[in-house]
Length: 180
Image (tube, rainbow, N blue to C red; front, side, top):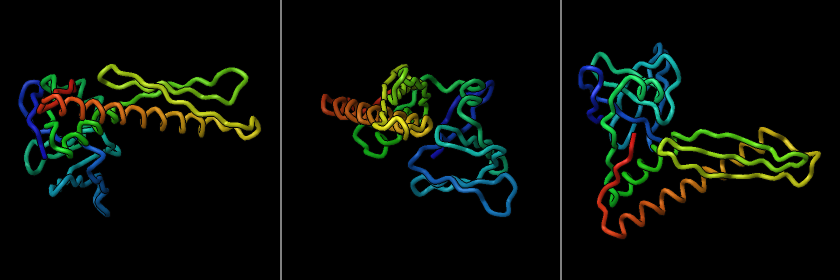
């Protein structure tokens, strides 16, 4: 579950929180959470709510803690790539989840319309668009329009990444090197 990474200046263990895992707040325990992935369960401290794309850092059995993705990237050397076995369905899913977790959204509403466009960008530099439209101008809701446009963009991106994995497997690649 934990992978080695180089921190400044020592090496530690970290675990990327994936959508396929389960995060749960431990009741009646201050700032304590669990993360379950496959058959592994880890308990850790978190002073902000952990989300998919964040990290759990393991120093020793008494010092396991949450670090948000931005802070982790700013303060650690992650080794440039994360390798996923392309023929393993769970590894492909982890790869797609890791990329989708880096999504940032920018929205535009076309003037005098109910048409919303979302440009979704990912850490690997790729971007995709999604859109939504409301037929009746009286029913237009900006938050709902943005949410639907973002969902459409993420759906298209997920399809793109899954197709890319399939193509790479078909032509004989055995792993994906993803710039973290």
